[in-house]
Amino acid sequence: MGFFSWLFGIDKYRSDWEAYNRGAYQEKIIEDHEKYMVKTMLLNEARSLSGKTAVCVMVVRYNTGLGSLAIHEVNKTGDGSKKGPYFVSRKKWKVTSVVHICLVVETKEDYGFPSSNPYQCGPGSHPIRRSLLQVIEFNTAQYRPMDLWDYAFRQKEKQS
Image (cartoon, rainbow, N blue to C red):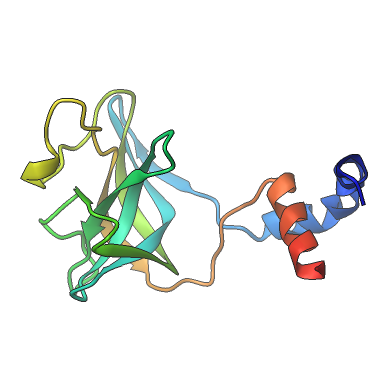
């Protein structure tokens, strides 16, 4: 099947895709302020090689395909640790498929949290726009909404 056949055949997935997204988790804004908002959202878990647990609060991608990972460590009570948010090495931290519902503070526009990692705070470093307040639900079965293209692509992969 050619590209255009696949392209125009995408509508056959539309009703299933709409049903899939009706069940998807929707972010909820709890408080909205001029410079930041408090909201719930789904965040992936990250694990360090030494066994620490965190959530991924930001991924910065570069044209080279490489990128930076900003995490916020989770303490035993599920609150965001005082260690974070900060940028980490992707060699020492791995993003897992485990997803948590989290309460976060997200800044608007050019505002952000400075990285608590002193080696990542310099000219040209990105401000981290999210900080974890608390994990509301660990290892949730909730999932993110998906656009039609991604949904159709996944269905095609399943059929192959």
